[in-house]
Every structure is written in structure tokens, then in C-alpha cells.
Length: 172
Image (cartoon, rainbow, N blue to C red; front, side, top):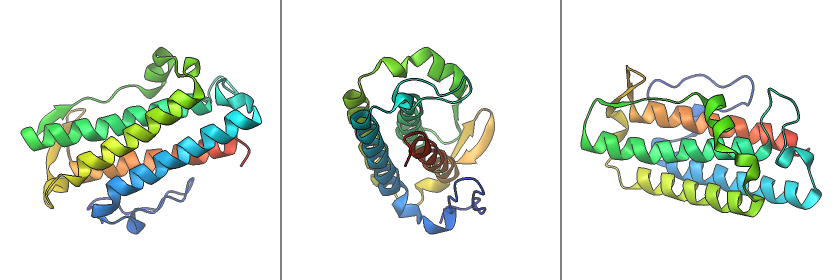
């Protein structure tokens, strides 16, 4: 288990105690495959929320998936930075601004499915090559010191949470 993550999410029931440190990458990939399946189902069923927002404050399925694709890319980037330079700075982005500017609703569903799968595979691979102590490496995330393992677990939680969101949007 990653040190510093202790609470079960009351909204999505993500339980960090169920994820061993060496399972972070495989779990990211498992979730990516879940996104891929929801996109496929929503595309086949003609789900309106696939590429249009059901409300102004709720992203579409493609927008949630594009956001998670970005998160997965950040995992790989953090692994590279942490390996090269302890206390390396990483700045987060405003997720709403990023999604608004990325135009994920214009991406073909099949393309987004491939993108999230590749992002999951790349994040899994990036974590797989790290040595056993790597999750304790410290990065400066938005100016605050945080271990790579804690940041990765937070991103895994966010991915899990958004998979629940798109599952509900798709009517599952």
C-alpha cells in the first residue's frame, strides 16, 4: 500500500487499501480498458452523453476519458522526472480549462478508445520499470512536496471516480 493514503472515498468507494504498490500500473491499465468498454457501449447504443455534455457542469464521456488520458500521461511524466531529479517541480492544470480547450468531443469514439488504452499501457509500463523505492521519491506538485506513490494513487482514485461517472452517464 502507498503511504499517506488511508481513506475510502464515500462517493466512488475507491479503497486505497485494496491496491498494493506494485499493482498501481496494472490497475491504471484495468481502468483504461473499462473506459474503452464504456465508450464502445455508448457508441453502439447512441448515448447522447458520449460526445455532448448532459449539463453545463458535467463533462461528456469523451471529455472524462480525455481528461483521464491526460492524467495517465502525467503518471509517465512524473516517473521520468522523479527518476531524473528528486524534488523536481510539476505543476497541475485546471481540469475544466484543459477539457474546454482540448475539444475531446470532436474526437472519434474509436480513436479515443485507442488513446485511453495506449495511455493506460504507457502509464503501466512507466511504473513497471521503477525500482521498489521509487514510489517514495519526492516531487514538488504545485509547490508542495509529495511522494510519487501518493500522487499516483491520487490519480488512480481520480480515474476510478471518473469511470464511475461515465458508467452512470452511459446508463449502466
